[in-house]
Image (cartoon, rainbow, N blue to C red; front, side, top):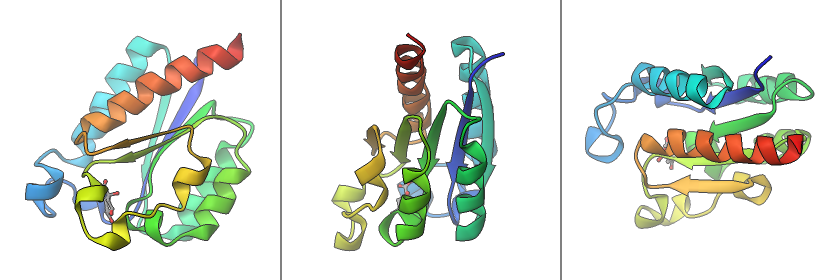
Length: 149
Ligand code: DQA
């Protein structure tokens, strides 16, 4: 069975393609999901792809990933900058965690410069547009292989 990679998306990312396209581009989250699924197929990874506007739901999905998923790719969106609860949940996950931001948060408002999640991330991909998800998956594949030995 292919290792599972859980891809989690935080609030407002359901509006990707419609919301601030000058910052986030015109691709929808469904477009991102289908790209991730085809890349997952070629990398031999089983992709789970989820989005929620609710912090508790993201936390529950991180808990569900424990002992089941080989890696987590997460774009926590605005929760990046606010959520100790998501950080704590990620601390309880044993595999690699890749943090993705579509925009270059460091070129934006100061409140976006700090991420609670980066403290637990194996890698952070910022400002590469939606391609960041694919880059994160490629990195996840390498890290999963390294742990499988
Ligand atoms: C984001 C950056 C966050 O600051 C913002 O709140 C988002 C999306 C990104 O992907 O660039 O919703 O995580």
